Length: 178
Image 1 (spheres, rainbow, N blue to C red):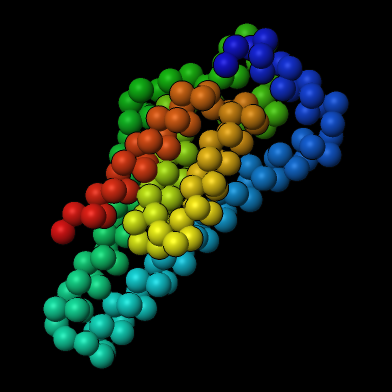
Image 2: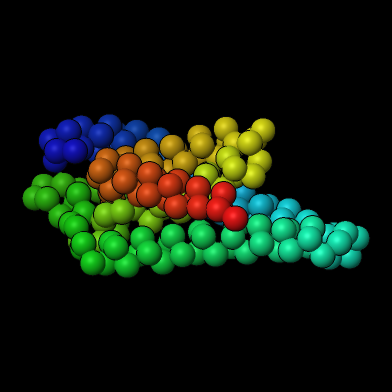
């Protein structure tokens, strides 16, 4: 996004303080809600593992344990790998451009690509889609919201969030592996 285009967004939110407050609150709340969704998944599959261990055979216990650990390790590895990638690439943030004022203050000018918020949202959404498809629409909408919010507050470019979400979603598909 160009500085001129973002200045229009910035000016609109500065002229509407209630909307700016809501935007900044949403930028904090939506990722937290995604973390809650992830916690629900962990609880669900942890309980499934517990039930299998106490009420089912060895094969069911092994399957439940395997799924639980995939749901723990794949998002963790995705976040660690994404952090390593962004530190290696060290792409500048949009507000490093002259005249670009973000709505959200953030320290540092680099490590923008991929967006860790979008990466996390993508992996959580994909895990949710694969394990709870009936309610996955909520996770997908929240992933999209995280991406839009990070661009609107001025801390990431569209490229950062799209690549972050795609990378996270793609890595989450590894849960399907046996």
